[in-house]
Length: 257
Image (spheres, helix red, strand yellow):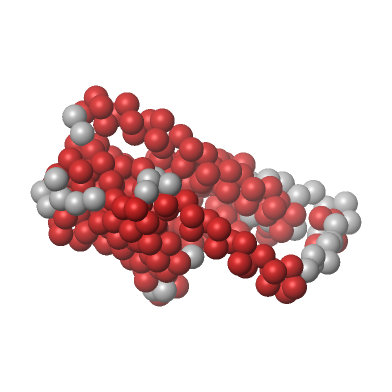
């Protein structure tokens, strides 16, 4: 998905130079995939939720864990979605390019995410899930600080490459933590809550970032302000402690089953 976004967003920027609606023409590509999808995809067999658990056994939702992870997912998307919504404005503020250059800067953000996800398994084995969260928020803080300090297109490009790394660690880690701790009978609801939180963060991000950008004096200052979100990265932070507590509760429920 990340590698596809590099091409998709880069080409969208190039097409925007022809007409501001040009980038949207790429969505027509989905029509080319439709026949292959209809021919190859089929509805999988369905199982009742009770089939996977003993009859009559209570299945408890690990609400503490789910709420903390959903809050992290929402907050992360609130920050991350500044990249597609504000990068073009930043480059214009710097007088460093046009929509095409903005598209490739956003594309390298996604490329970095894809490359970083390839080492997630080794990172998890070395740091554990809490350590991955800590590393991710420290790096995103550093990445957006670089974005805020950028003075030309080259610096923006490098900063986007640094910041994008985190997306390849954070999304797999959110899903891994949730799936590992949630009992089988609650994983559908848990994943649904997680997905909703991710997309709500994307929806709310422009509504929050726009006024903040106007208040602090530009996109660069907004990026520097958002870098403070890395305070959530400390393993001793309240969010990490709550997440750990939720995981322990879910593990105890699973063991009892």
